[in-house]
Length: 490
Ligand code: NAD
Image 1: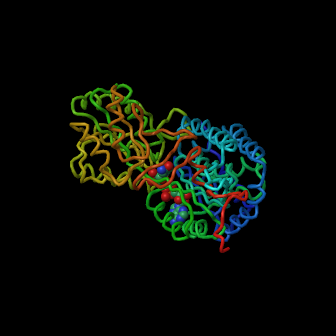
Image 2: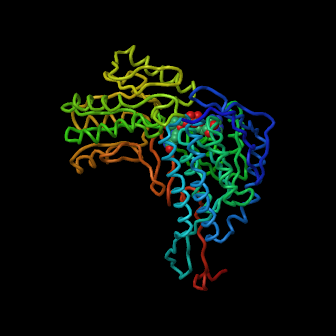
Image 3: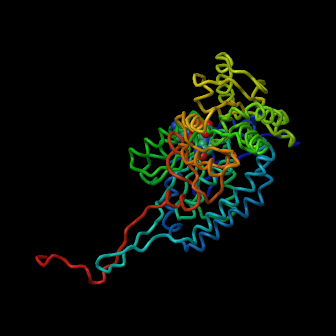
């Protein structure tokens, strides 16, 4: 159990290799008990401008560095992060309101993102094209310049690293703004790590601000002419407006947004594995994962048996303050999230849904809750919940499962359980999602895979060479060797 401590002293924002105080600060709370975790810098539009200008100045040297040197530095970030893992995990348990095991998982994963990004420096960065006139005709990937990165609070380690690691390795410079709910974990912690790793001044900058100041800072991060690309991970409404602004300025933008993912359990599924995947997918980090299982769709013949197994497993999850390692289910991140989950639960119960497990909400703590009798007229059927409340919905045929999965504006990920891989793959092919996992939960990620959603779940892909595609510009560069004829009149 972690000891309660005085608020953490933060050094300021990190701009041009310097720690800078902001004129104001805002309260960064521990969601477990609402105590003040730190006073975070409440930056302004002018701070964003300063960070963007610093990143712009740093770009030519960073982009011009030998790729081997860039790879070495990015690799070193992984090593420093690994050494700082205990600090990161402790902050996950407090600032982030996450279970110890969740912190340990992020701390293990993040260095892999940087190693994978460092390795991308050794990959081909273009193609040789045929040329009718024997030219040397090349398509070359070049870094773009300053990339703005806006990250969320739910997996502040992984989702922030993923947002900038490959862009940085490709030779871009970065201005990062973490969520106001995790300004340390998603931002200032990274500034400490990258400073220690020896990333040159101005190449990586972190600015923070309160929710009240975010639209002003966010606008600057998209509109400033030095910014060439935007990497956003967060909710669909905010992502939509960022993408619209980026579009108006003709800037490249990758937005990873919300989801309403299904786990489809077919009548020939391994029910132990399926119920474990449902339990993990629905309740890991209190359901606050973009790819959380938000609907469990179960074929009629096995519905009762599956529900019983799922309820038994979920009933064993311990709820409580995450400073105690034994508590797997912690608080929701803020009162806004609790209000959203409560509104969906109340609405479902008022319209006839029934509680198979849980239902208790105490402060920010919501017990793992399983609902039956959920119908399409209920908020919880359509809207992203982002909390530990999940409906189990029966279906008759494979066609019905596909239709139920696709009956949402979102399209992030999905899971399909069946002992018949061909049957599961055939269903997976017809799901309108960016990702699908057979015999696994919808919650899956690895640093080098094409991660992203379709429909209202986002635009663009993160991970490996897909991140490189996202954060570089492709140029056509040729060399003529005297072979191209011109019309004789010239
Ligand atoms: P959010 O959209 O409220 O905030 C995300 C980020 O955007 C934060 O840094 C926030 O400060 C910033 N922001 C808010 N308003 C802004 C504005 N006007 N201009 C610029 N920036 C602004 O989302 P959240 O509550 O932090 O995260 C939860 C949401 O994120 C969920 O919907 C979840 O599904 C989604 N999410 C998606 C993925 C993915 O990879 N698809 C991953 C994690 C979370």
